[in-house]
Length: 67
Image 1 (cartoon, rainbow, N blue to C red):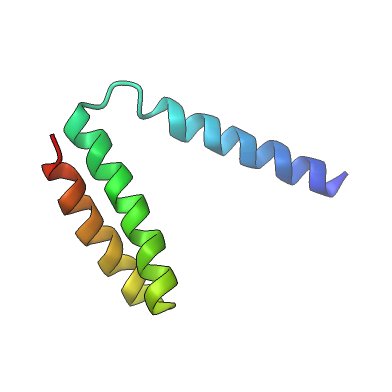
Image 2: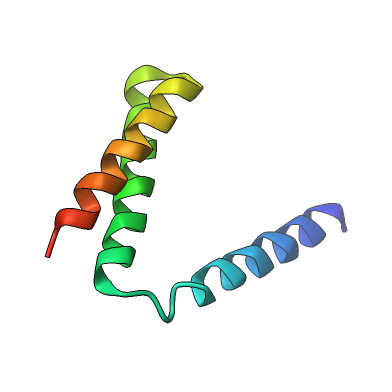
């Protein structure tokens, strides 16, 4: 029962997060994607919060410049 409730809550959060992206411009979408990819890469390489935040910031900047 507990795991199905967690799954349902996770699905609700994902639906809400994805629906928020429906009216974004291409530059905003690219910046968000870059931030996510950069955050994951920073965490994998550095393994701490600072590396994750730095990777997310750098990825967001690079992503926003992609046309």
